[in-house]
Image 1 (cartoon, rainbow, N blue to C red):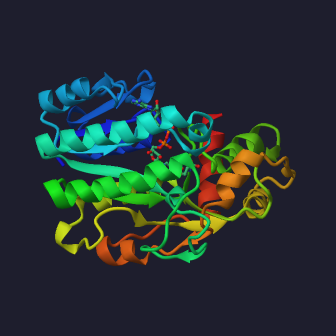
Image 2 (tube, protein in one colour):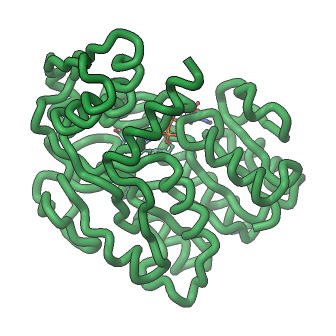
Length: 313
Ligand code: NAD
Ligand code: SER
């Protein structure tokens, strides 16, 4: 990785990934791009306004800057995708096809984040295997499975070094999430600090895989720098750090804020999405093939989130 482009750089993952990559590889070697304007944190380094569906501008950016690695994060997330299915298909699939074509032309390595959403009701929900039945029932999940398959296709057919992870719900304190079903696990911290109460849109017992952002960033960089000879799967690796439900997260927050309370006002759309996803994935392939290991469990994540959020409020 010498010249890196991050699409969707103003989002929850992109804003933190870009800064970490700039610290590691030099600000002048990491280009950020998004349809949204640059965040203040991204302004010291190069930034492009880019809609990933515009293949010509996308290609020019890669060519002009001799990009060799692309982290392709631009997408619409699960809840927004159910609200705007056609737009989500357009952005998630045509954006990915464009970046695959461009990666082929310019021989770029490509990172594509898939998700727990790539699984469906027929998938084993506990200890979900790396290789198993998928058949998601959400538009977002369908775009992720299709994306996983397209990345494999471009690798086998055209030699594109396309790698990827199935991220669980991601929790972070810097940039708010962009419209996913796991967003409750971030919103709860803002509410706990501001009003010591949270109205949760998922049922108390909705167990899902989750991960703290520093682990998610490390995972992306470690996968992209792993020796390709060790990678049997290369793409769509299950990874997880913890698995909990809203009641368990609230109990952990109460250890730090005893007056914190939670109530449940279930949103049927988001509950149905969450109910279609696995509860806890098996991530042994990632551990064996490229040494994946999470640093943050539930207590460590809650402690660090509250510390970071209090220091910025
Ligand atoms: P986000 O919504 O916070 O950020 C996505 C960014 O993409 C936004 O800044 C948005 O402006 C940009 N974008 C949207 N449409 C675009 C377009 N047409 N052209 C250019 N930019 C566009 O999402 P995120 O949480 O940072 O997720 C990044 C990637 O990781 C996505 O592919 C998402 O599916 C995947 N992922 C995220 C999570 C999570 O919990 N955050 C979990 C699994 C997978
Ligand atoms: N966290 C994401 C979402 O809820 C899963 O990919 O959409």
